[in-house]
Image: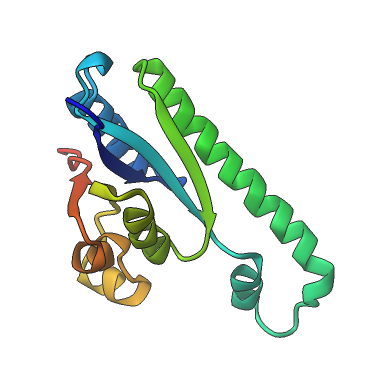
Length: 159
């Protein structure tokens, strides 16, 4: 069959993104030998200056920057370690990439860089108000990524 198409999945530290990763591993990579895609797991790590900027101008950036940088690196390592464990559990070989930047831009740029056929994202399930205030990575990517975009929603719990 030649080279496989590339599927990107963006993960963060949310249960929604790991639900999406598990869903993809189960539905597209079982058994792993029959997989039609090469899987690349991407994580967008915020830049330290963007995080410090949220704290306001009173923060002495030079004192805080190394601490914030170390914490963001640690958080990214935890996310990737969890994603690797999920893939290993299902015997799926994947490539893991951490890129600094806004998740929306990182995902769309990764689509171009890796010539992805599909981008998979988890849905946080925000309502219209939260989505308008916080922005939606999946909404942005569905309009700007130059490939098919699949948004995996975690089923709502029935009461």
